[in-house]
Image 1 (cartoon, rainbow, N blue to C red):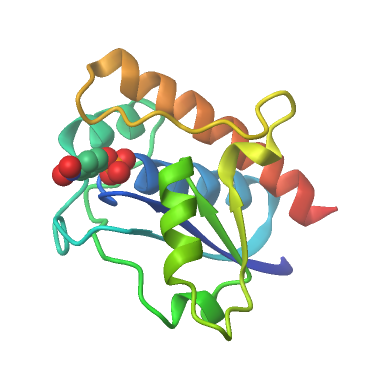
Image 2: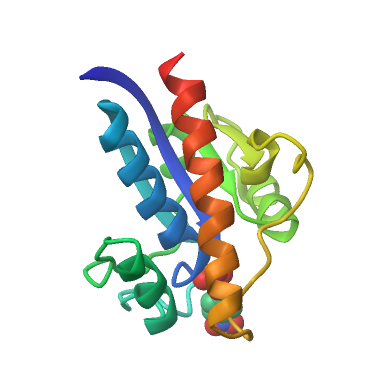
Length: 155
Ligand code: 4NP
């Protein structure tokens, strides 16, 4: 195993997008033999301790991944020094992260899709008020980003 980065994915609620990003990245890193520390968190605290949204669990299960054991948490001050990379799922998340980042932040903050060719500067849309097709799109986006991230970190 190659020792590598520690990565935190951050969305608003930590029940839809960032757990899927975490799952996709764990899966891609595992397949690539890349040792990584991975977690996800929300900028908001509404879903602390909750399992991911059932629709997120369903789309992960379609790809053979069980995320029902994940539990929501809110980003903490120490995350900004514990992780080498913090990826925001959308622009609002990135703005919030920059606002709350402590002065001693060592993590690099970026938008997740910045790593995907042709998608730089774009957000992963919030599927919370959408349907299964929106969760499928979320999966496709985070899975693509996960592959790019593994390639980037392994290189
Ligand atoms: P997420 O989706 O940020 O992708 O986890 C949401 C989950 C919950 C809420 C909004 C978005 N909420 O308003 O409770």
